[in-house]
Length: 316
Image (cartoon, rainbow, N blue to C red; front, side, top):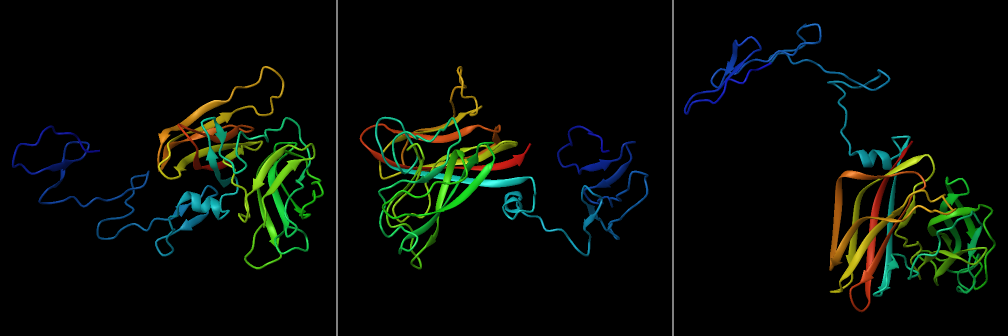
């Protein structure tokens, strides 16, 4: 271990000393460092470098000098399914007409209505378009994604029914955080009209906007037995409008008897014009069964807003 010899006089060269104070290198005669293992045995020199082999947690070699490891972004590895206990979730939403009253960032507008307190089957609400039918030119099937009665991830695909109400899912959902058109009758098409997903009790929980093929819901709930780590958020305001964009959490979403757990603000972009984002050096952690969503309020008039947050899910 090199010792600190104090300030170096002006014009003096620098020296490296070992733990006994012996000079082992200078600015004009650099040291030739020799790596050693824990037993003190030389494992390489400047002239003959050591061949290092890397091992994983199971003591299996995964990189050698002749077969080097490839360093890859961790999130890409997660997205590729190479890390079995982790997954990535991208949530984005849009509200085209936010007023001076707070609204959730979702395409249906107003405050979100789908925070359910009991699991229930869902369906496509009546009032769509005749082309969005099992034999139509538009959307023929829709996949609904959320959490089931056990707060575990679940999805189900159901057939569209034109202007009528569809059949209900066999899955009962506590949360619906995404839906998308699975099949269409025309190459390159999506849904002809807006598709509203509702519970069998008539509560709207998601909307696929006209020809969007996908919900725009800036909300998510951490599934059971997982922890979510949000590492980036962003928001964008239409034109020169000015809006407050706020990100909320509600822990213990399964607590449905009074006193309830309060919602809490965890990030905000105040008086935002244009677009911005924030990457967290230390990602924000959210426990299982925590609701997360974005809302917006126009400072005056009406303005459109988009919001996004990215979640790394890790099994508990």
